[in-house]
Length: 326
Image (cartoon, rainbow, N blue to C red; front, side):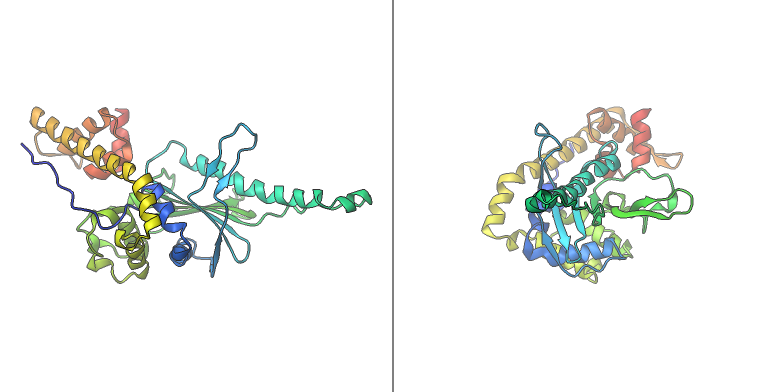
């Protein structure tokens, strides 16, 4: 019988859980970390300071549910940044990003219209105040613990970051600077715990720290040369939490944390059991470990998500997706 895996008492909270991400990055004391992260993910920006905005956004009509961003902030030049953590894969995730980008854009225009309506005296004088339709740039920044689909091999910087704007199909001319999308796909990182030395770029080291934060007991030696990594570990340390933060974490995040490991334990146990029952032979078939394929099939049949199966079998998301269809 395979012994039950024992997880050590965690020292760092899991950043890939959206509620934990909010807990850390929405705190003004950690604003400097957020600024450095954004400057790395959007290299043509030089953000000096940020102010946090109201994260709650109401729908287009009264019946629409309220949307709450993980982090919503504004730079000193008025540019706005929505930063989201997405731990699980979603169908049409890019379309979801586009949909949510309409909230800050719409609110910009609504504020301008309200300013005109407030000018009652001017309206009574039959003046015609003009609406300025120019929009301040909005950046939708998504950190995903899964791999998004891409049509072109060269779409990703360091295999992890892609950036999009609204441009002409023929020559790439920018139509408007009002909307930008940035995706940091930490779920694409090909390295596991113990392979930190294989991380060569800043993006890889940051992705390694963010993806496996809760599994570490200390900052890995191979990641210590990246300043932002050290800051992320400090911000995620349970020992550095205020009493208010710890209460929030215990109340809102622990259930998600427990559920995450319960899923992994179940997937691992079922995969192991299936492997023993069927006597899976070891071998290589089309460059893929056949035992991993069988375990992946079992996990998929038990309702595990594609990104979760990929993460814990070592298969690529594309290979797992193909198994789910076949």
